[in-house]
Length: 89
Image 1 (spheres, one colour):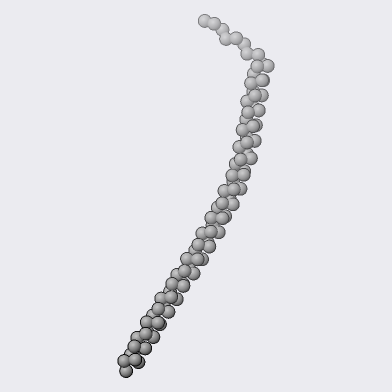
Image 2 (cartoon, rainbow, N blue to C red; image 1 turned 60 degrees about the vertical axis):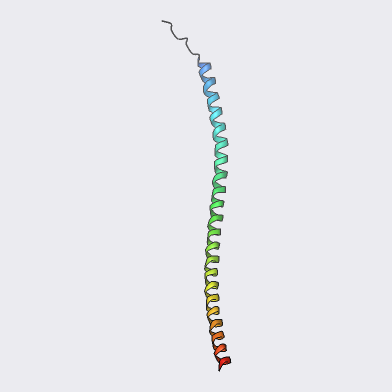
């Protein structure tokens, strides 16, 4: 059975420092990216909500215009009927 070699504290410190540097770099990259993505996601959500509200307004307007058009069609049909009766008489 062999005994493990003792690890020098310098080796441990260097390894830990390297890991800390890597973690800082990951956090720095991830922190900036996620904050930017969060702002971008909020802007996208706001834009989507604004567009959905605008779509709803336009839908209501279209429905109103279609109802008005139907009403005008009924008036025109009634006028044609009245005109045809007057011409026949």
